[in-house]
Length: 320
Ligand code: ADP
Image 1 (cartoon, rainbow, N blue to C red):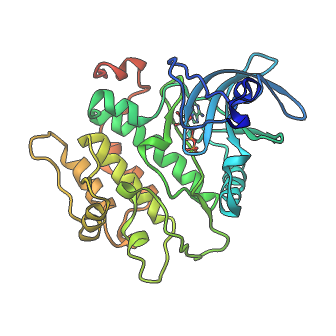
Image 2 (image 1 turned 180 degrees about the vertical axis):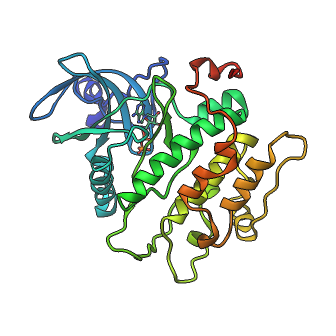
Image 3 (image 1 turned 180 degrees about the horizontal axis):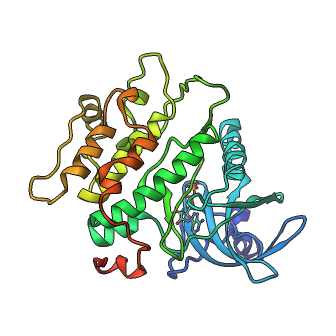
């Protein structure tokens, strides 16, 4: 018998986090953070689990004034190696500098011996992944609504010299008003000087731009986010990403060959198809700029919904 089997040891074993839906989280097998998380200035009381990612567990928290936030908790133990630590520091630095209505706001960061705590804006309606899963695909007015918010936030980000590099449905959160908020700056990069090119290969297979995958030595820049916007727009209208296949290698081959098409049985406007095909150009310089996208007929000739109702999760909204 080893010591680990004694009752005292067993009860000291970390308890897995209990999720909102009552299921036990198996991913992050370390103790839950303290009930009250304290920074220098404020304390935040922990409520239920909002979700879990690769590194973080997110909790709903409330400050002394009753304001609700999301607390992203990353255990220091899970941050092995310098690379992961610098990724987190970079993410914090970048997110702190961005103040836009369609970018998840960063409020506070602090740590104790166990964890790093990030207090961010809470977005209670999940992400566009969940919305699309429920609906299969969105209507063109809804796509216009979300693309405009996304373009606005990306214009702001690029003006601040930040490339997100991982724009995808799962990183587009929905707040209480069903407005879009860009999240997860873990792969974002700052452009330090005009004309600087980035060399790190990163992104998510379905959304990754061809010049990142098949770098001819030139590196990549802001246009990789524009490519991702094209993939996002296609996915919202069609219900699956343009280069989707089972094998990752086959996805890359399709991206290289620019091999995608619109399912013939779907009714998609010519304006929408034209905008997508302009964006999904293999040559980064040929893609429209964000300002050009915003002026495109798809986004300017039809009315834009004032808001998206929460009922959009279950029924197709009608806009009058
Ligand atoms: P990681 O960087 O470890 O992947 P994420 O940023 O993806 O962590 O966060 C993990 C999960 O927590 C997300 O999948 C989502 O369900 C939830 N989450 C993240 N940020 C928020 C937020 N601002 N509001 C509400 N839930 C959030």
